[in-house]
Amino acid sequence: MPPKTKLRDPAAEITFGALPDLIGYQLRLAQIAIFRDFAQTLGSYEISPGLFGALVIIEANPGLKQTELARATRLDRSTVVSLVDNLERRALVERRSAAGDRRSNALQLTPAGKALLKKLQRLVAEHEQRLAANLSAKEQLTLVKLLEKIFPEYR
Image (tube, rainbow, N blue to C red; front, side, top):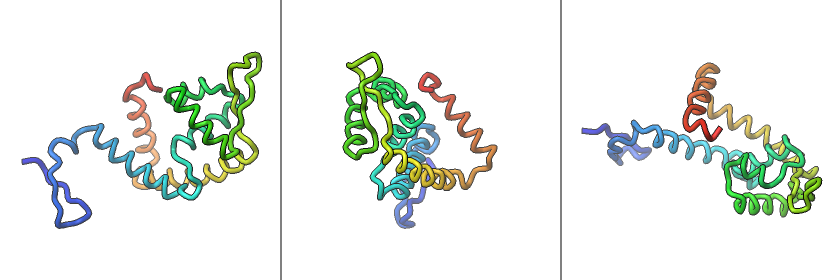
């Protein structure tokens, strides 16, 4: 008989069958917990992990084209257009014509975007500390290395 996992309500027991032994299931549970903590930490700023990632990439690569941002974030171009529209509406990012190519937009953080990203990076560092609280430094490094081995073509 498969093991039972107790939910928060001690009266509710559900059998999960083979799920607890599946890597994908464990990664999904971790993702849910990580996204919840991220949302609680940055909730007042209305920044998702995807928006945060885009801000970090744009800040690290001033003048990045939208197509390059799409490739870096593994998102399709139409999704990146709406992501950049969102950031632009909030005056965090601005589009400029890319040098030598009027059909492409080069992205840059605005001063407001830079200031917000600085605040967010401090909050995300606290979030990361909570995530890794039960792991030693060596275990953190090992976890990252192991995760990098899953679908290495996405790296």
